[in-house]
Length: 88
Image (cartoon, rainbow, N blue to C red):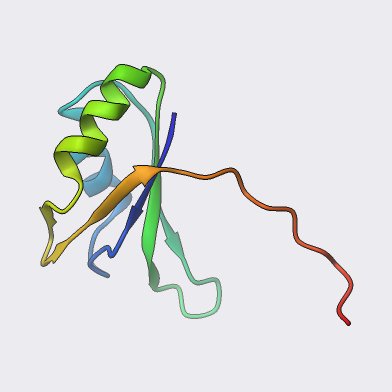
């Protein structure tokens, strides 16, 4: 299951996300999304967990909890929408 984490402190790293979610089960991948121009965090990230039960437990336990200096928003990630390459 792919999990979205929002309202991340800009200092939170991939390892911080991995550590927080690994308390609930096996984490396949954890990544903070970085701005390609500034190299700074965009304030959100994703965690991939293979076990849905563990992922749901992590979501319910970590949503609105403090990570770094902020309370994070945690929910199941929605599928990525296709972007149109043409502009009007």
